[in-house]
Amino acid sequence: MILMGSLTSPFVRKVRIFALEKKIPLELVCDDVWNQSSTIKNINPLGKIPCLILNDGNVIVDSRTIIDYLNSFSLNINLIPDNPLERAQVKTCESMADGLLDAAILARREVIFRTPEKQSIEWINWQMEKVETTLSLMSKNLGSQKWLHQDQFSLADIALGSALGWLAYRLTTMEWQKKYQNLNEFLNRAGLRESFKATAPKE
Image 1: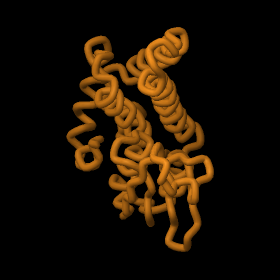
Image 2 (image 1 turned 90 degrees about the vertical axis):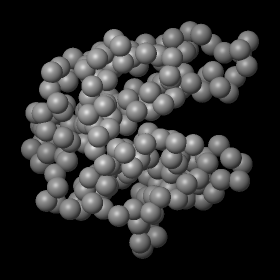
Image 3 (image 1 turned 180 degrees about the horizontal axis):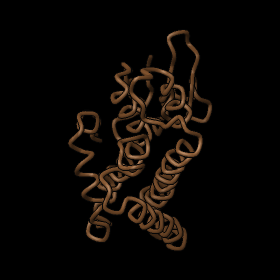
């Protein structure tokens, strides 16, 4: 299977980590979706990554949908609980981490794609407030645990680790690590896993 993505996208990284933890081989093919010559729209008309191209040519888009599909492989390695409530709890953590990223990316794009006089400070602050409140909630949910869901490594930790890794990589002046020390310790702990090491964001 081929995963269309990039080395810096946290959503692509989330899928790659999940696949590595499940021992599912994926071939990463990088594509710059912001480049006019990008062919991603031939695969996903929305022009978004990640996209998973199956061996039969079928295409699955969106990181959460891709992960749901990959979860059917390597059933002896369980990263999403079978119990409906526990599954919903883990998937909620994933959605919160993804939403945090959506807001942070929107705020960053306002800065890098608009000249200073055209930037909306209100828009940036609104998005960053979402980031801040989500970090506060995730920090509270983690508490003194090693991992988010019942202290066992799961998709919830992969999603949160991918989000925090992106914040540390792209928003270097934010300094969330000082305010939420348990999240910083969590990221350092997750970063020791081979799946996180192999997918560390880079240009």
